[in-house]
Length: 389
Image (cartoon, rainbow, N blue to C red; front, side):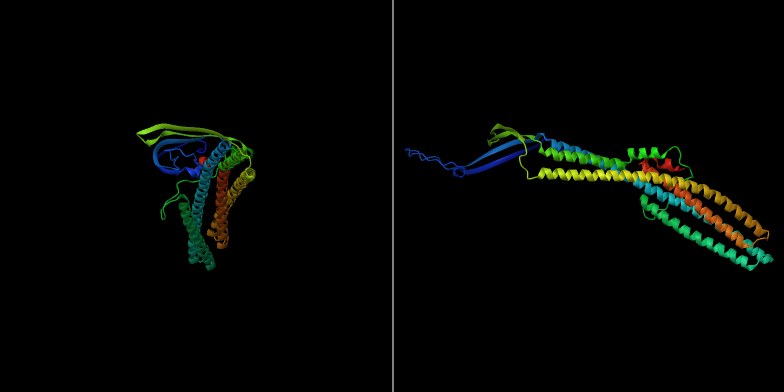
C-alpha cells in the first residue's frame, strides 16, 4: 500500500558553495571598458540555509493498485493457511489421543485375559493335586498364563510410549505425568450425506480457500503486469524557507506534475506478463489438484467410516460368541469333561475378538476425525464428530 500513499520527508540543510561559471557554459567576453574589469568567472564562496518539506505522490498508477490487490489476496491466503495448520494440529492430537484410548482398552482386555489364565492355572493345579487332571494340563495353563503376562507387559510398554508421543504432540514438559479424562464410545455417523460433505468441504476447507486466494492474487498480479503499459500520473513538490540564514529567509515552494508512459522497455513488460501468466497457471493447477485431493479424502473417509462401522458390528458379535465359548470351555474343564486345550483355544479366541473390536473402534473414530479434517471442521467440530464424553 505504501507505493500508493504520499511520501513526505523533511530536510534542514546548510549549503556552502563556490562555482566556476565557465564549467556550466558562461563565457563572458566584453569589449574593453575603462574602469570595468569584466564579470568574474568564479562565484563565491557563498552559503544559504534551507528548511523544507518534500512531498511525492502517485496520482494514478493502475499497476500499483493491482499489486496492492494481489498483496491483500496473498495476506488472506496466509491467514487461511494458519487456520489450516491449526486443523492439522487438532487432527494430530486427536489421533494420538484416540491411540491412547485404544491402548487403555487393550491393556484392560489383556489384564482380563491374565486374570482368566490365572484362574485356569490355579484350577488345573488343584485338579492335578486331586488326581483328576494330568500334569500336561497344568503346563498348558501355565504357558497360557505366561503368554498373557508377556502380552500385558508389551502392551503396557506401547501404552507408555504412546503417552510420551501424545505429550510431545501437545507440548507438555518432558516427564510430565498425566491421565486421559475422556472416553470415546461407538457412535455411528448420521445426518450427513457424502454429497453434503463434499459441498461443505469445498465451501469451508481453509487450505482450499487459501488456494483460491492465491489464484485471485495471481490474477491481480497478471493485471498489474499488463497495467505497466498504462501511463502513470505523478506529482512532486516541496515547501519551505530558504535564505542566507533562517532569520533572513523567505518561503519557497515547487509543485510539478508529470505523465509518464512507456515507449520502449526492451521487452521487460512482456516478460513480466509471461511470468505472471505462468504463475497464474501454476496456482490454478494447484487449486484443481487440491480439489481432487479433497474429493478423494471425503470419499475415502466415508468408505472408512462405513467399513469400520460394519467391522465394529461383526467384532461385537464375535466377542459375544467368543465369551460364550470360553464360559462353556471353563465349565467343561471344571466338570472334568475337557482339558486345558479347549480352554486355551477359547481364551485366545476371546483375546483376538477383543483386539479386533478395539481396532475397529479405533479405525472408526480415526475415520471420523479424518472426515472432520477433510471438511475443514477439525478445530471447531472434532468433539462433535467423534462424540467425546
